[in-house]
Length: 70
Image 1: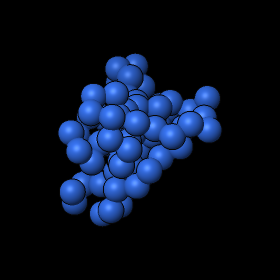
Image 2 (image 1 turned 60 degrees about the horizontal axis):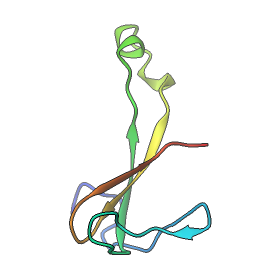
Image 3 (image 1 turned 135 degrees about the horizontal axis):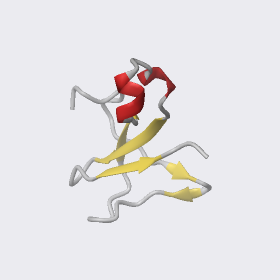
Image 4 (image 1 turned 30 degrees about the horizontal axis):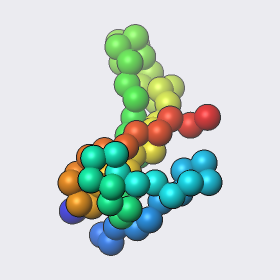
C-alpha cells in the first residue's frame, strides 16, 4: 500500500470509540488525508480553503471511512 502514509495498518479511535469497518468489521486501517474540493473554490484557484477529511482505509476490504473535522 504505497499510497498510504503508514505501511502497517493500525487500530483507530474516533470520538472515543474503536473504529470497525462497516463492511467487514475489521479493526485495522491505513490512514490518509483527503482534500474536499468544491467547484467554486477550484474555479477561483482557492482549493487550499477547502476542508481536509481524515480517511481510514480498511486493511481487509479497502472500504474508505471519511471523517470531516468537527
